[in-house]
Image (cartoon, rainbow, N blue to C red; front, top):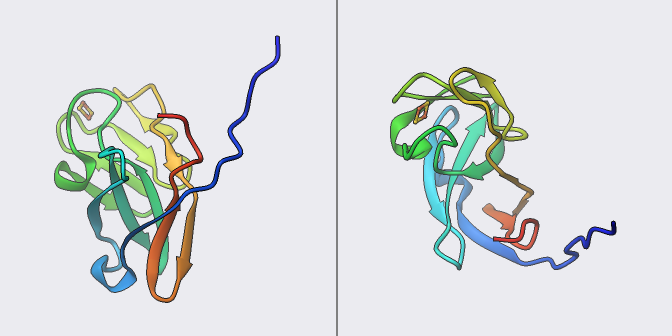
Length: 116
Ligand code: FES
């Protein structure tokens, strides 16, 4: 079976780098309305889906950063913000992580990286 991979690139401007302090999380949205969480860890920026894969919690509103891990305050599940992989129960399913590019002091993601 052949899988089709999307090669579409759609760079989306989410916010200014100065709007996300080190160790902070900010909510953003793709043009489709899909909510994402923007993280800053040690001066590097990461973007994942905003909604926890265990429930309906918003990671940008109900989560907190501990190094590269975001902890969901609803049931204390965790994800690695670098790749969206779960790293603490009860979270078992990954959330999507979005390729980030910093340009002219702005945080961009490739919204074409995943089919929505
Ligand atoms: Fe996030 Fe349960 S809703 S850990």
